[in-house]
Image 1: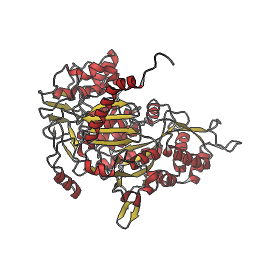
Image 2: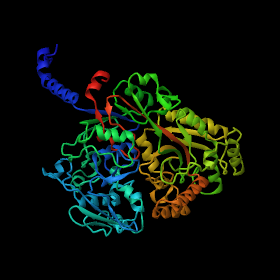
Image 3: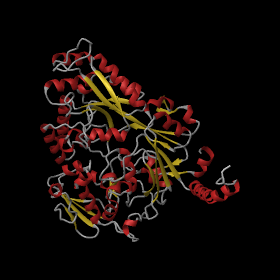
Image 4: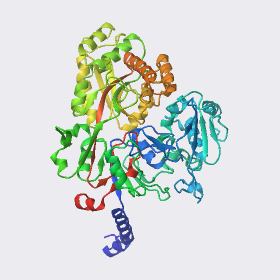
Length: 609
């Protein structure tokens, strides 16, 4: 044997310190309240200026603080102060918003602060907003900031593009620091819904300048905020661990606001006086395949299964005279079902810059409308969503301010005969092989970008069957979610499928998907239609009411007519909650609910891991 071999005793002496450390870590974790959770897609990063996907935004919302927030226990869309002392003072013309911060809110400790405790001040929000305009960050959120037209901010961006450097010290007229805790935002034109943006911590979560300057391009890996949690560990696309922020402000469980329902009032009584967050750690694992994510929840590896894979809904939900109830599989384990219509829309998105499916001429429009009429949405709802969905008529999501459930459009029709007639009339004639050709005579072959999970594979089969009836050949490019998103933002696709959940009660948010001012960010179809853009800008200036609803409906009519997207369905949202999780509510528009739940250690020990 080699003389370098170690004896068993020497190996044990060498491993002893490591074993002690592992034992101590395991003991600490066992005594802590840990919420375990799974994403259905991988994250992309944690810098609010650089992210747009829901999974990264969920993490960011628990690390950073926006000035306002939506009330966890209130009716959906109820705004309340977060880091501010009161709601903003808003001018009668909806152009000037003055905010006053609460003193004594601090960023999490970080070497960027040089050992000092760093208080949140008004200048931090001004700096955070300026970052969206800095071309260096290529922010997908810039379009939503640009469209509210903060006075002078676009000019600052233009100057940075010309010079190659954004001057953060230069004054921007619409972003004024009034004193240490007060700042004012002034807009060029009225924007009654600007307050919704002030309640989004994944976008308007305060970032400290010192942190960005220390970490530079790696800042997305070093998020430092004032929120209830801090990033403790990140293994990209595999594991995210958040720990309780030890410097988090003294915040207790909220009282029930006016209009709260019975369950919200009961939770306010149960948790009154409890300091937030109530859990010590959150562990998030991205699991893109539905079956493994479902089995991990059943095996108690995760405490909450948010947005249960709808293909598996029959295993969890049974119909009753009163509505729905858990199946015996879940009922005997005390697992609770929380089910409601999702405030979302699922979409097939066409690349309007693509030479085959894009364009605004009659043949290109006819092709997209034919594909929309030929997609069998009933099959999608039956097979992909297990009947947990309804056909969509427009982009607007149920539950948002101007949604009209009575409206019917061509978008909601399944009519292969009409689709084939459209293709015939506009020159997409079949070749000798039976497959259609373009009006120029080239083979008509389309490519759809999907994720390689069960839902993606089922969508591929439905699309293949649906388009075969039209004589249209379709191929598929499968890729992981972050990879697909990057390709789509760069315009490297023909057809893509995606779901868009509402993050505010504002119906106009989803209409940004076809607004040319956000091409490459929210306008993933890359549509550029002046008539649509003019209506979009008009709606931005209008408060909720009949006039605004009429404007949004005209936008819907243009979207259906030009067909840059196919609104497929509005899904139901089914969440499953193990019995040891206390305080969980299904709360629309709220990404940061982790602070409001607790883990019952006794029940977990009896029934769980």
